[in-house]
Length: 558
Image 1 (spheres, rainbow, N blue to C red):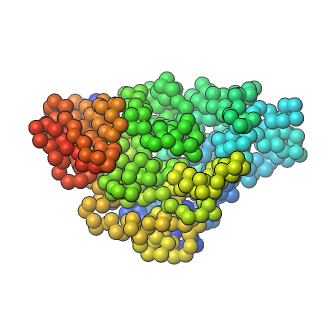
Image 2 (cartoon, rainbow, N blue to C red):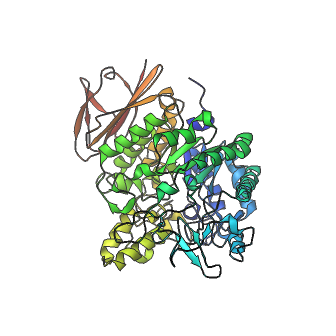
Image 3 (cartoon, helix red, strand yellow):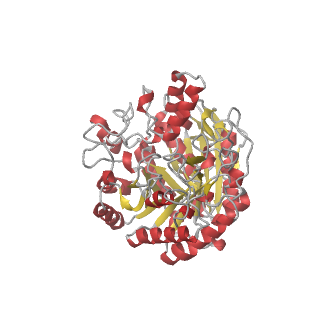
């Protein structure tokens, strides 16, 4: 076995800075707030901190609409605050991964403002402008956030492309000047101590230039055109250029947010022999409890579908690349509310989700708050929701005649706001996040679920995460092992075996509120307990009697 790369035996902690910790009492989390909590993050067993964007932005899409790539937004602090944060991270033996939004900018970015002034501006080609067709948009492509992907500019008599919100015009990576701008930005932050990049929506960099019409969605003139802009062959060239010109010479690691991948494309992106990306963050793995890619058309969790998806990607990427392992992020509702049982077994099921995911092959990406079992905030009013995706979906739903009651439940269950409510630090007012009313209301249950309560409780979700990250570290079966899923059709049990030379482990997870019995495979009858979420497992004659939402991982050293 080749020696693992440093990031392959690491754990990542993802921060949504606006909601992490407010150091100055203005209701908004900031960089000094991150610095203040570095000891807490280190205590989890974290090696890498990844922060969502904190650049100057009009905040049309949670900071993923960047207006200045080299400036800290005033609400987050100053460049001196950034330098202090980086120094604190490195002093604790951790590294920092920056979120880089390279597919699009804000429409308030200076490049786009210059592009709007004239078709002859050199910045006009930084973006994708096209004339209309027959008095309408250049094509019927749909925006990921709803409506058309084209916005009309009367002064130019042209439309610009925005795959996301209309305030997020897509960059044109076929202009060499754009690519050079990206090099300069990445080098700027690397000079300031950044150790790697999480690349946002990065597999959309090339769009087919004829922009063909697609089949419209039911009830809409627009349709999703992913086959014409996602994972096009030219993207590999862009990735190799970034790797060769910036990432490899500086020893930076990369993880790419990707979707709509087939096996060949995924391996092409992340196979070390290709020299493109280090790891993939395939967020569409979490689409197993909804209709297609519509998060506001929820379905009950289909555990066999989730197991098939996980098994597929474990097999595809084994010896051909690396995966990010995650159960939640800033683009998802809370994992516990979504996949666990927050009503009857909140602590046990929160632990199970970690056990089920983080013994697979890949790097754990832990989203702030999941390590204490935070739930969706359960807001009482539609006015408490902030996210552009949620508000666009709400407006379209109400326009169709849906009730506000239906959408209150939908947004509470499925919106990105579920994961963006302020971190619950304590039972103090405003969840200990701030000394004043935060930009977004805290979770309604923060007095019962918070880091302070869990800190000294040996049976808390927080301390389970600490144990899990400690015991998985350095295990050959976890880092190098193959993965075999068992009981694929069982709607309640997730069981898999990891095998490496000299070591095997088995992870057994009961995704139900019922007791289940499971006969251990031959050779595991005398396996040692690695970790469990409810005390010593009950094993007799090779059969383990699982309690509701029990999770057990056993290990055999051959």
